Image 1 (cartoon, one colour):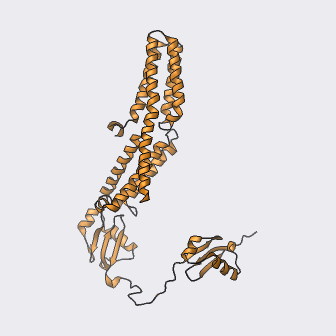
Image 2 (cartoon, one colour):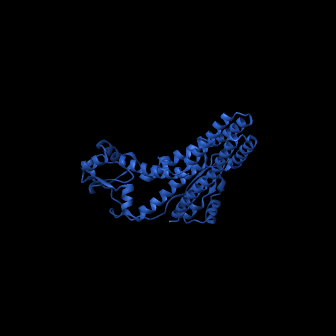
Image 3 (cartoon, helix red, strand yellow):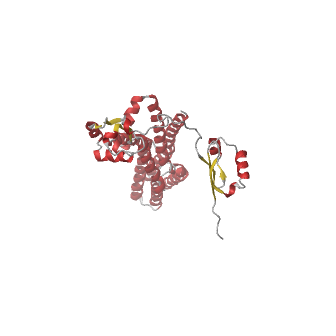
Length: 126
Length: 226
């Protein structure tokens, strides 16, 4: 009968891990999306220096949360996002506005996909 | 992680259903749910081991879910016989008074050849010898022979027997096994005394067996040739 208590503890641990994962992945992803949107707005307004600073902020944020996110998500995905951030910053630093917009959109899309993939939707489960 | 947990639960139920549909022929000694757990856990555990970019948690969490489900299911099966019947099925009579019950054999999809082969493994070479043959929930068969073919036991033959207890390995490769000592009702001091009387050291012994009364056999270690 003691084993049933272990089973209940394991199930509670599973639910806790699932919520922890959502918290760890969603927070930096949402913050990054908001910073990227601000950066693209600033770029449209020709305030490139401020936009570059925001890109660095996204990069720092991602580098900081990467080790925690790696515990839950396939490492290839996090590596891809890191390289997308670098590409976006590089484009902005070298006055390639169109490429910057493309990279920013791709990055946003990747972050949204990561968040969506972790939600227990029927489409994800099946 | 939600997806891993829910997928694990779904696969668990799905494979149990599949194994139940496949029937008793497909499983050997394990209960259906045990076989399912064994199959899935071995597969899941291999994924994060093979693919290092896969987080280890995505392997651990599904295994925890499966383990928990297995425990919870087994507890429910103890409490609710109907649930046990649903998951494990129930024993099925295949032979009654030497007569094959063909409808039951068709239902379980067991051929006469398979059944005869299983009977032969139990040292039964004629269907006429069988009073009852039952297919158990784990896929094995149990047989009760007709009275003339049954081996008489000591009480039927009115033979008085003594209980000397079980013979156990007490020393294995020079090491005293305390569990076996308890089984033989023997103290360590008594054993050492006996060894002293035989002029033996426990390190020299490869295997020593004993029952409740005495040391039954001693095999010494082979000496190394230099």
